[in-house]
Image (cartoon, rainbow, N blue to C red):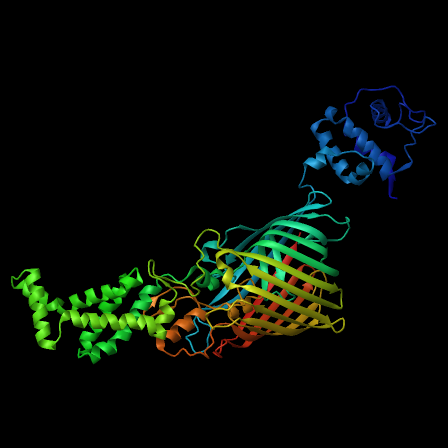
Length: 628
């Protein structure tokens, strides 16, 4: 046991005290000794009591336990101490907390200072990558070079031996004035701090001495708050935050581990999933433009000139756009067409002095004389034909089937109407089991089901395996299946990835490194955001930043939906067509030049969507430093 000279301990304990002077308490301490006053004061107050033979033995080394006894006695006299003396005592009580606990002494000062055992770790990352407006090679390939910093302040607080509290503040800063990379990152977030994580854990198993920064005790935990969650071994399926409650049985690093949680997934890519959850606003205007364009050939066949057909098609588009109930569509088209057919004639007659009613009657007679049929008959025929198209045309039916005529919003899944609000995170219940044989293999099985109004979107299960061939070489693979049939490609989508890793990178081991090569296949409907790779995020969750549909700017739109709608509008959509998703290769190199600093480079190549449209190669580089 570590010992320290009693004289040195006495110097710390004296605290420049103002105790009342006492008579000589020990035979080996005389008034001539430098410590006489201090020893006498402490003995008089009962802080020290010497040895049975009446001596003090100031040159003798004492144990930490004996020192703890002295600190405990000083704590009982705390009310008589000055502010400086109390500060010194607080430090001593912290240093000898273990001995005080063994003595059964409750250290109220320490118990009230719940953040006394708080560790702060800072995470600074600089990164750069291209961010594409349209990633396909047959496009203009406009992109910004996104360069920025991410800074995090992580806190780990041991409230009690069983209760831990965790927090993470995060901010992003652009280096070149362009939007920085990251799921749901916006210009408004630049340099703004947000509370990315805040959760507490309760450990009910045997208290052990091994801890993990993100999870506290590594086994038998209850966790509440906003905490990190990774599905599978690679994190391509989901690697982000989750707000709710979870329970963990078994050790996180070895043997069996079962996790169950319920709450909301926070790293969902809202731009990518928003249309599926909230619908696409303004789609009725675009559908109206399409319907008007489809009406042109019929108007021409009815004997109208190209100019007349073009003008009337715009009138029809306006009729459809102002319709708020499908049952009113026929009447609106008939009324608007009737007025359009005679508008110029009526205006001319009114300018000549006729009343509006007289002008309409005269114009109708003139139209019938010219065409051989009444305006009512013509407008009724046009209206009936167009309404029939909405009911039978595959192109219009694709749009109209999910259209809310009252507000003009189009819902790709007509049974999913998630209201807009402050909290757009997706409600999820998940379960995950894994078995870990350290340095040998890992087996993962997991499932997740979204709840509430978005329940029809996802009910998925997956499995993953990682196997170490030797100390330097490992292989891994993962498979995910969404059991919900999605209308986009009329399928229950799946994804998988497999790869190989050479090396073992460890942020605490200088000169450690790892090279990983993955092949990733992800059908639309198996990616929702929060991947562990920024390159994978851009491929699997590609967003058109300015998508125009039938001449109307629809703003940001996921490629899987925009490509489908474009094909529908152009009449090129077929049952065999497949939209969205991505299949690509991803190479990653990581290197630790010094403890606490990691360099990483990723490169995505030979990428295509599920319709075999080729995508650009994408690179990503970062430097990440941890310090405490």
